[in-house]
Image (cartoon, rainbow, N blue to C red; front, side, top):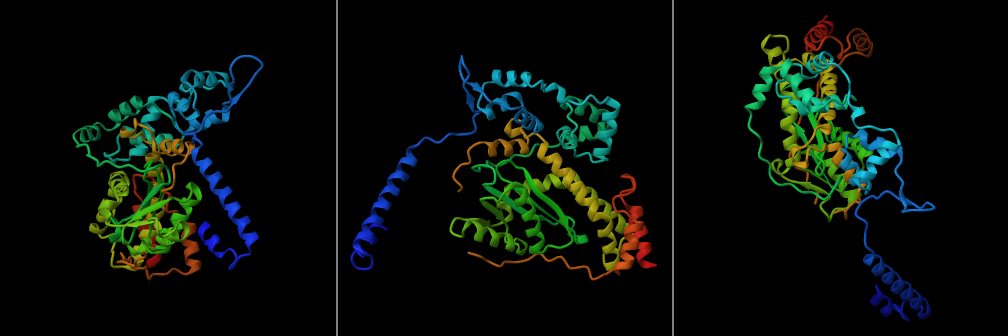
Length: 416
């Protein structure tokens, strides 16, 4: 720019004005160089306040401590986040009459067993960490040993099955920080019944940012879920997804919002989408396998006909709210469960700790193949639909019934 102004001086720009512009540019470059030499703080540190005597005192509020404890941070982790010693963190907890042990629930073993049975519901794949995370998502903090003992009492066969399973060997994965890279994908395990599960996960913390079922695989559906996640957690620096057409709107948004020349939307094979592909295995173990087996059984018993638009409409009416409810329970469980490779810090804790630290530098459009989910052509008149909603609540009934009686009632109503 300086050389261009020198050339334009006297030709396109008045000599005096060009000289003033050159002085402004020199001053700007000098200030920029000085800013680059200033050491950058690597994280949050509690501010110090000076008293009349002694060393400056760390200012740590009760709200800060309660916030960090709500994410189940340990005492040492709280001290590291605030940039103080473990002793100082202990003193501030004592000063505000806060005890970490007081956060644990005092529910009896019988009450715990009853809650564990309701959460597991015959799914032998759920282990102590998953159950403890689900309890924590409901505001119930229980020691891990108590949850393990409860699972042994209520389902010893499931504990033996998990003990014989093989540990998964993972590839090395690194990313700069929270919201640096989101992994997006759609799960098609239930596509036979026109149900697709769309999900997104933060690559750094492994926190699920959205997970929701839909009766279509349209780009607008995924975009709506993505916008809700952005409203809650912020806009990611980059997203990684496959070449499916359902990702087109999200990729277009990222290219416009972040720029096209920096890899804002990374599209490739699903095998390269490591974080989300690993998540689908846990989604299958956590809930998808239950609905897959149930829907298959309904077909075998002649209750469900997938070639009938009426039957599929009734299936979606009864089970879509149930699947979304169980997906939200799974999200709470996943985001609160301890990760072995991060010293058992949960995804929520990883995300919050990363956000509290100083964020690091934030690191062609194709229209490829589509996975199409046929739209349901069956329609219910508004008056009939209102009557059905008044008569049948999809989330009602006992968990043991799995909604089969509700499905039969809806089919009877529609076919009458």
